[in-house]
Each structure stands twice: as C-alpha cells, then as structure tokens.
Image (cartoon, rainbow, N blue to C red; front, side, top):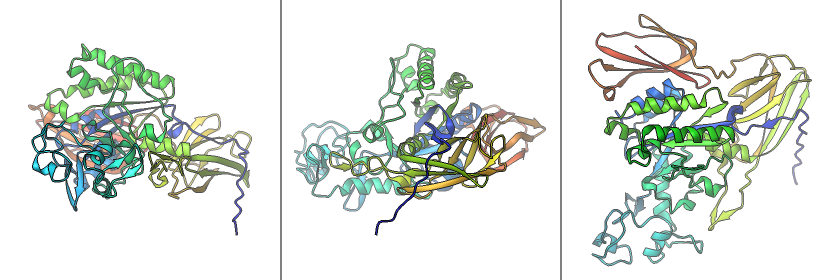
Length: 489
C-alpha cells in the first residue's frame, strides 16, 4: 500500500538562501596538514581579522585527537582531509604505491606491475584509476574509459580512502579533501566518498572560477582561485603588492557576482621561510576588501555542505496556524541514480551537516513586528523589516521531509559585529559571550616561538589572565555567531 504524503503549499513564500545564513558570497582560506609549532601565528591572525581557516588534515603528519577536537570546538578552524594519492592498501598493509616516487622501475614495482627493472619512469606514477589499471594489466585500478573495475575490485583504493577517513572519525566525518601532490587523475573514484576536493591549480590573471553552483564532477576536482604567497615567492607576481591586489580583485568579483573565492598556502612554509608577517598583511587586506559586505567567512567543507544541501532542497511549504508559523521542506538528491564513468554520483545526504538557511517574511502574520524563536534552529538572523533567516540542521541523514515552527519569543540572534575586548590588569572582558584562546612568547623572541597556553571552549564574557613579566600575550575571542577579535598585551 502506497503511503500518501500531503505537502503544504508555500503560503508564506519562504525561500532557500543561496548562501548559509543569508550571506551573498563566501571567502575561504586553506592550508594542507597541521604541523605543531607552525600554525599558531596563522590562527592568531585569523582571530585578529575575523577569517575562517581550513586545514586539510593528514594522520601521517599529525592526528592528536584532543588537540584537534579543541581547535575545532573553538570555531576559528575548519577541517578537510589531506588525501594521500600516493598510498594504497596492499594485502592489508597501508603503504606507498610501489616505485611511486622512483624514476626507474625496481624489483618492487616489477613484482606487481607489467614493467621491466631498470626502465625509466615518471616520478609520482602510477596513480589510482586508469594508470594502475593499465600498468597492472587490469588487476588494480579502474578503467575510466570503459567503466571496468580491476580484478582486485579497487580494494587497494577504497580501503586506503576508508583508512584515511577513519583516522579522523573521532573528530568528525570529513566531507572535503585536497590532493597530495596535486595528483587528481583518480578524481572520479572519490565522488562516492566526499562532496568535493581542492586540486593544486589556481589563477594568476584574468577571471578565476568563483561559481557557487557546480556539478559533482566539478566539485570533486576544483581549482583554487589564488595561491598568493607561493606566486609571490616564485616571482609570478613581481611584488607582494601585485599578488595581494590580484587576490583582492577576485574577492571583489566574488562579492559582486555571489561567488566563492578561496586561497591556498602552506602555513608551515611561512614559518620555514621566516615570513610570518605575511599572515598579517594578507589577512588584513582580505578583511578590508570584504569590509561591510554580506560575506560568509566560511570553511571549505561547510561551504560545500551548504551548496549541496541547498541544491538538494526540492520544495518548501509554509503556513500560519494558531499564532505560529510552520515551515516544511523536502531534501531530495538530484544526482540520485546518475553516473559518470560508471561511478555513482549520489550525494551522501548524511554528509550535509551545515544547517540549511531559509528566509521568511512575517509581514501580515501574527508574528509581524514581534521577536521570534525556533527550538529547532541553530541560529536565527534578523534582516530587519520582519525578514528572518532561520538556520536549521537537517538531521534525517537521508532523503525525506522535515519541518520547524516559529513562535513569538526571543533568543540570542546572529550578530555580524566583532566582539569588543578590554583588558584591565589582566582581567579580559568582552561585550559578548565568547570563547577564549591565549598564546604567548618571550619578549626577546620572534613570533615563531609563540605557544598556546590556554583555550577555553565555554562561552563567557570574562577571562582572568595571569601576566608574567617578560612575555607578550595574545588573547583571541570568538562569539556564538563565529565572529572574532584579538588583543595583544
């Protein structure tokens, strides 16, 4: 017997927002791997300029669960996976693909592939997918041309992917990734495992790709917009000012065209090159370029999650009853049952953890001119003139229907304002409830010696700092609306 579902009309004209929280563009700053002692000044400047950083994590570099959980809980860093394209699982062993970095074949490669010992080969070869399929005579890999799985049933790949994801499951299920070595030849194979991936390509002139509505294939192998620090270092830009100005121009285009701009740099490279104050100069320029624009300072994974949940929203219903407003919505995967090269393009709905944002106008309802509340919402944003954005997590984890209701009442609403910090002899106060992070360094030492000494992931408006002579202190604060500020003492 078929179950009938009655979905209400959208009588109140509720609308899905193009960006999370009703923003009109997004800006993201990315890095690969977290290396202790080589990220602290980056996080300090993210706090200072109210920007979000994304770290693509690798358990082969660093995976201390308690540290990563604390960093994530504070809210200034987001995570993705640094996917090791050079690794596979062979007979239960996690290892580098044989001879992957060699320039001639050895007995290790010849034992598994159709190659001759001593013959020259390209470094960073073979890669997952077509290359492994061809060189193993169809035993490993995947024939992307004919949609044929190797005799090993692609276990060397899928088990490696699952292992790398599993390493961070206690922290979160990572939904985005970047490619080690920029090797994205097996990108299609990663579609079932992630929402999207950042490749190593970028722009240095002209219009970069800022679109915030892309296909599964485009998302899984997406170029960044800029790679500013690297391009200054290698001379592509004659001066640092030229590089930063190009980045600012692309941010401006993203704001004007409702797009998504990203920049990538290896934070640890700035430490290795003794160029730490580039963080300050670059992040300051980004913050100034954004200015008062309605920009989402986003993490890479969150931006992807929102794009796909937005595009999966099939319909919205809304009506008023008994002084309350009811909103219904349906999530439906528009890619369901579609394939590319024989690989399913289904969107894993359970990956969509970022709340969905729905705008509603209460004009003409009982709630006109009144404050509202929503028990199901993570947050509510007032746009003024009885217009509201309701940010509600989709908890079903699969295709289906959900609803929430608005009633008269009040709760803490989203604020775009940065918190104001004051220091009175070590008593640090803020005008909004915040989480606190404290770093310090000896006055006689450089910024590379900065260490974290405290991190309080409970919201408060007061922090008591014990100041020891001979040290410079940095105190970062971040609000429930994820806006931050920093004071140096």
